[in-house]
Length: 61
Image (cartoon, rainbow, N blue to C red; front, top):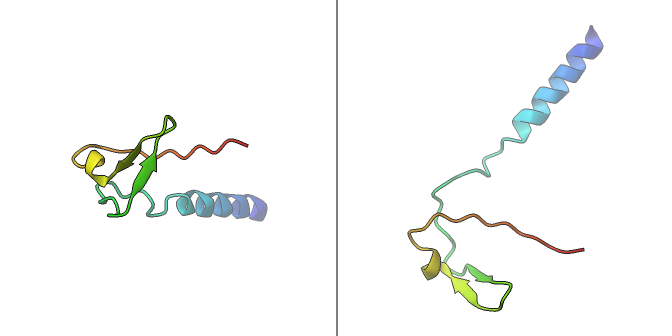
């Protein structure tokens, strides 16, 4: 029984810790935010204004 309590407590701590405040929608982009697309052009804040955005960082090995 104590072992089950330990695992449940650890699992709850892990799950609640994973829900940090990183998920804050409707935050403004920083003024100096720039993105370079794979085909070369760079985008700034003005291209993202008024549009929903998702940033996905992909780094090849």
